[in-house]
Each structure stands twice: as structure tokens, then as C-alpha cells.
Image (cartoon, rainbow, N blue to C red; front, side):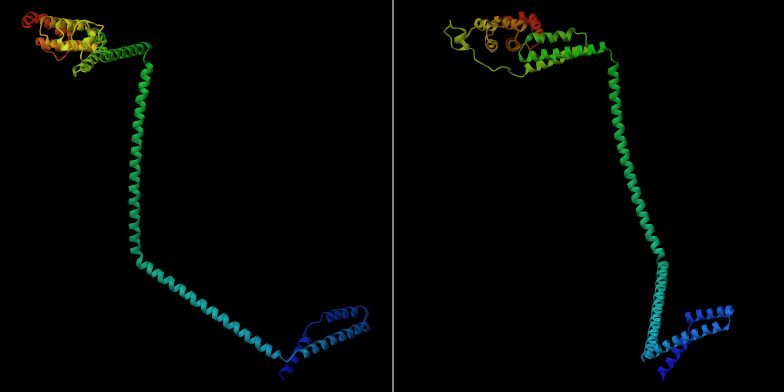
Length: 357
């Protein structure tokens, strides 16, 4: 029953549907009828009816060939449509739930943020205060570091400025001033060299030149330099023996005498050895030392003569020490020959009678 109903519907649909060929023939029919009259129009109409009849017959056959499962297909289609509707409804409900959940979360966060905003604000203010304090400290340390560096740069600039001033002053110095300065340095070096010779070589002439420069030089700086060198020489001769104590080789120096001990040499022999400039200086120093045991006027006068005239400062020093033991003369400056000579000139008449000949 249901199948027959479907066939009837299909037939109605075929009849009601438009046929392009029939429409064309109909338009042709109307056109021919207008031009040539009814015979041709009837002919066109019969052709049109045949075409329409064939078309309807074909559609009817096609409709009858449709299987009986058409009803079940329609039922499945309706079920699919119902399922699709259910799915769409389910999606819409889930979207509604998601929307409501999102709105709820937003409201919860908004309320929580509103309630916690004072605490958050205080916390943020504290953090900002700490950051500002740290930035302030860093800024102060940076400023102090910059100031220190600027101070160092200023000191360097001051030093550089002073050096430039010195260079400028030197450049302004005339050639005559430069020559004077060089001449002073030359003479000062000469004074130092004289002091070295007086100490190392026992050279009395070098000491006498220093004394003369101290007393006669017009340049105060050179006078001070000469006095310093004299002091250096005298300090070198104040500290003990400068030469090793060696016995006099009596057999070599006095082969004509049968004497082997230096202590057996008499005053004349020791004075002759002391005055002999060809003898080694250390032997002459030893002779001046041994005269201390010869307490007589001849020994005293021989020692005064050596102090006044000998060219070797070691011999002069030993002679002055022996003279002091014989006569009682006292002077810490053993190389001050002028003081010794003046003292002897003043006291010789008193001292000589006390010395045995």
C-alpha cells in the first residue's frame, strides 16, 4: 500500500515537471499558428503530445523500478535528522555550560581581586619602596665612585700641571743659568772625588783641598759640600785601625844590625823608619806606634813633624795618637793637625823637661 502511494507521487511529480522540448515545441506551435494557420499548428501539437507521452512513460517505468526499500530509506533519513538535531542541542547545552562556567570564574576572580586588592596594593608598594631604596643606594655608590675617580683625575691633572710649570720654568731659564748649574754640579762631583781619594788612598792633599774649598769658596753650596766631605773623611779615620797591624821586618830593613825583634829598635832607628818615604806605609805606621814606648823629646818632635808634613793620612793619624800618649794632648779629631801644632808651640817648653832623653 505504501509502495503504491509512492508510485502515485512519483507519477505526479513527473507530470508536473517541465519538459524543455515540449516547451520549445509549444512556442514553435504558437509561432507557426500565427504565421501559417491551424494545419501546421496541429502538426506541431501532435509532435509535442507524442514527445510528452514518451517522456511520461519513461518516468513511470523508472518510478516502478525503484525498490521497495524507499520507505525504509526515508525512515533512516528522518532518524539521521533527529540524531543531528540531538547533537546540535547537546553542543548548544555544552556551550551554555562553558559560558556559565566562564562567567562564574570571572565573577569569582573579580570578587577575590576586590577583596584582596588592599593587601596586594600594600605588597606592591613595599616592593616598589625596596626597589626605590636599592636604586637610591646604587645611585649614591655610583656618585661616590664617580667623585673618587674625578678626585683622582684632578690630582693627576694637578701633578701634570705642576710638571708643565716646571718644564715651562726650565724652558725660560737662560743658557747662562744652565751653564752655572752644570758648573756647580761639576765642582760638587770634584769634592766627592776628593773625599773618596782621602779615604781610600790616605791622600792628605785631597783632604787639604777640601779644607781649602770650605774656607775660600764663594759659593755657599760648595762650602757646605766641602764641609760634608771633610766630615765623611774624618769619621772614616776615627774608628780603630784602618790597616792590619804587621810587625816590622827588622832583618830586611836593618841588615847591618844583629836585631831580630822590633821592640829592640831604638828611637833613632824608629824615627828614621818613620821619615823614610820609600818604606811601605804600614811599616811607617808601625814605627809611629812603637815610638810610644820611647818617652823622649826627640820622639815627640819627630811625631809633630810627621803630623805637620806627612802625605799619608794613616801615618798622620797614628803619629797624632802616639803624640797624645806621650804629651797628654787630647783631641778627638786626630786629623786636626793645626790644633796639635798650636798646642805644641804653646806647651812644648813645659812638656819637654818631663820627657826623658
